[in-house]
Length: 274
Image (cartoon, rainbow, N blue to C red; front, side):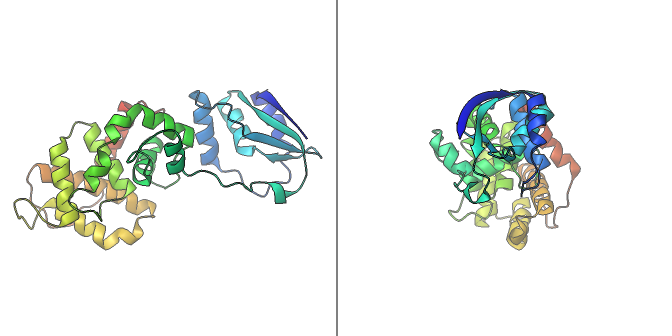
């Protein structure tokens, strides 16, 4: 085997992809888009990971990176290993780092390195609620830029109780959107303390915070569901605004498209490439 550093152009990437004839993994468009966005933004760096070509000329590893090069039209400087033994038994045997482990390794202290914050940040970066997140270079770059805004978010959603029912990535994303657009820390803490503890400062049983609390208690088993996440984000935004305005509420909230406009606004504020 030999390993060399190459600058893979879109033309070279397309040529290598023609030899992708023995792959057991389907190409994932979302992953290709993540990598292509990172390339376009200049976030991809030479990091020791390799594109592998077997001794019989078959592409062994690197289809998503190569497809991203083609999609973005940007070259990538990377290691290429030629002459790899043509056996899948030696491929992908290492364990990849989780986002939390990577953030800690890069010096991000708790709570920024927690799954709660990295999951919430991934929603903001991707603009999606499907749980597919974003690439790790993009996450690192984003949190480095917005670190100070994210620091208090974990304490907001945990307010009032150590085992907080609002401790979910989608709720953290909603809290971030509210805080990032100028909502006061005191109001956010008061709101989530009511949500988590079940007690309201003015003892109003019709507090909008209780409506959110009941929603989270009844439907938390659906937290991995995309539709549930979208609804949870919308309910949190609506309930907070009503809480701040001292409105009364007993009925459940329904999804409102307007609440998602806050997500778009925050992504623009954070300079996210759409």
